[in-house]
Amino acid sequence: RALVPPCGSAVGLGLRLCGMAPSIAPSPIRWRSDFDKFVVVANFQRRGWVRWNSENDEPWNVYWANVHTTREIFAPENGIRLGDNQHVNHFPNHYELTRKDLLVKNVKRYRKDLERNAIRIGCDPTTASNDASAAFDFLPPTFVLPGEYALFVEAFRKESKTVVAQGDESNGTKDNGKQTPNERARHRIGSAGGSRMVENNIAKPKTKPKTKHPTWIVKPVGKAQGKGIFLINSLAQVRRWKDAHGLGGGANGIRDEKFVVSKYVDDPYLVGGRKFDLRVYVVVTGFKPLKAWVARAGFARFCVRKYVPVNSGNDGDLNDHFAHLTNVAIQKNHGAYSETHGGKWSLENLRVFLTGTRGLDATNALFTSLNAVILKSLRSVENVMHNDPHSFEVYGYDLLVDENLKPWLIEVNASPSLSATTDDDRVMKLTVIRDALAVAVPSDRGVSAEKAWKGTMDRLISGDVSWNGTASNSTSVGCLDLLVDDATHANGSARKKTFLTRSKTT
Image (cartoon, rainbow, N blue to C red; front, side, top):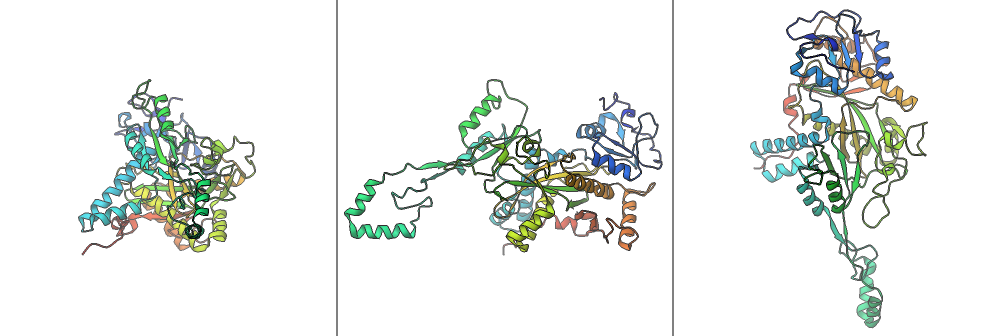
């Protein structure tokens, strides 16, 4: 489908050219979508909105667009200017957060900025560096290939450890080099028994120390749904893959495609022996000032096969994606995949499970940490994101929880899947889109978005309007909880720089 007519014309997108005054959008609201997904279309129709018709001279008001259309809409050379009553579901350069390599780059840059600011106001440099590292320790060590291949090799070798195989007691030590109580007792007997201990030592040949290599996960920057992902635990694997893909001077030359390689989180929290990750929906209505909401409606998605760690000394399979990758697009191809529950738990059910197994305090701390990770990632891009007032975004955050209930940010999706795998999944996604539209698209016509939203919230607070039949306030709309709103906090600009919390040096 041709998305945009030749430069100088915007008719094909239902837009008006630069310099032309936008007309006042009539009622009802006209919507347009690149996706005929039930959870999107049903929400439009339930609001009484009508589908935009290309033969009609009136522009659309709400466009649920794909990322390619968004690029065309905001491309300066196309001469397109959105009207006051037009809204699109992506920011112009959303990829600063959603492209794997740019996410890593922006988080690292923001961490360094905060470190420099802390030093500038008098913090000890070592303390500032340590605090910054601790505050942003939610991304595993990650490198972009092929550009950072040498740095990756250095990190790979640094993470590798030489250990004595378990069960090798010839030198009276375990992997950590310390004697166990039983070993110390045996050595005392040996000192008194002399020859008997010597015979025992001769009878047990020494085991050659082994090198324990960490596992790393390689992902193509521009793909989704688990495509092109694989695990490695030796440099030989990396070299073969690098040459086969023509990266960094291989036989086929250097390719434009980029990959990220991250240290694999090999101690995930397991439920029933199975690995899972979390899909958390985040709605952003502005970056300058930053305003974002986190949905309570989300899910945990599980692997079909039980998890076995992949490192020296066990039988874990690097190529078993059904045990390592939680993507539904992968898991649904296994014969044991359940169409009934889709391998998913709601976030609410996960909270109940964790409260029963790890306690209420630990569970609350985990979800507080999840919100902190999300907020820090948004802060890392707020100064590079083009804050077009016509844009909003529903991001799909993928996070992993390890055995210590520490959250790790895996990636952020600009177009999280809106396909429903089960009835519960459909209801959940309908709810998220419903509430995202409620906070992103003003219901009052002919007034500014800010005034319209303020009026809506005034009615909510006064009790004239309710969501889901329950009392609401300005920090909760349906399933969405307000994560941050710098516009309504006088100290918002200061609060965003408080991730480094240790005191100044004296």
